[in-house]
Amino acid sequence: CHLPWVGMIVAVSDIAEGLNVEVIAMTEQWRGAEEKVRHLQELEESLRSVVSEKKGEVSTLEGTVLGLEEDIIQAKQREEELQKTIEALKSEAALFDDKLDGRVKKYSDFCTEKDATINSLKAELDTLNNKYGRLAKYIAQQ
Image 1 (cartoon, one colour):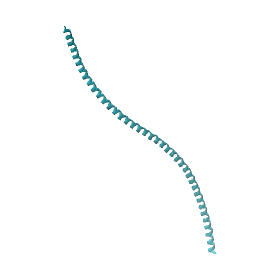
Image 2 (cartoon, helix red, strand yellow):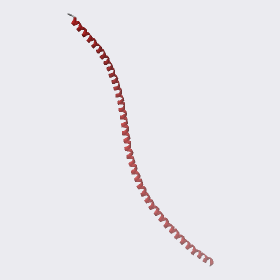
Image 3 (cartoon, one colour):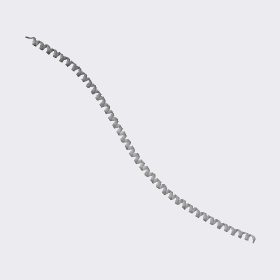
Image 4 (tube, one colour):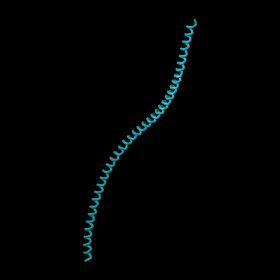
C-alpha cells in the first residue's frame, strides 16, 4: 500500500536531486555571469575614463584651433594694415619724388641763371680790364 508513494517519493527525490544539480550549475553560471558583468563594468569605467580624457584633449585642441583661427584673423588684419601703409608710403614717395623733381628743376634753373650771370660778369670784367689796360698804357705813354 505504501509502494506507490515510495516510488513517487523516489521519483520526487530524483527530480529534486536533478533540480539541485541544475540549481548548482545555474549558480555557477550566475557567478560566471556576475564575474563577466563586473569585468564589463570595469571595462566600461575604463572606457569612460578614456572617453573623458579624449574629450579633454579634444576640448584642448578645439581651444588651440580657435586660438590659431584668431591668430590667423589678426595676421590677415595686420597684413591689410601693412598693405595700406605700403600704399600710403608709395603715394607719399611719389609726391616726394614730384616735389624733389620740381626742386631739382628750380635749382637747375637757378644754377643756369647764375652761370649766365657769372659769364656776363666775366665778360664785363674782361671788357673793363681791356678798357683799363688800354687806359693804363695810354697814361703810361703820356
